[in-house]
Image (tube, rainbow, N blue to C red; front, side, top):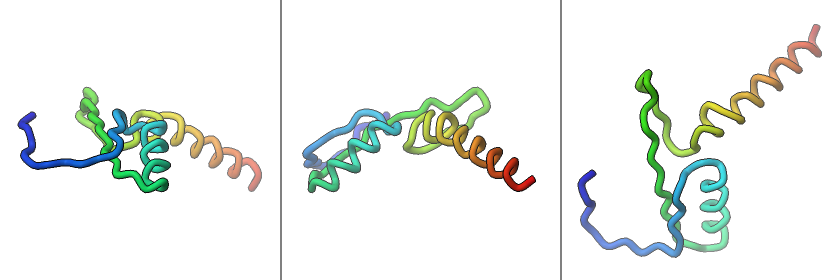
Length: 78
């Protein structure tokens, strides 16, 4: 990765854009901090990749909870 020229001034650098890192960054911004989130995702063997959020948010816990709630709703309709 080539370096990016410039001057950067942040109050906080959050390493990791998963659910915890994004929650930390959001709270810091709400408190008035200037925040940089550093995240990298290696593409899967299928070549898929996602932006911020990490495994839990994009393909793990959160989608699983959505499917679970959809199943509960489907059962309640019958």
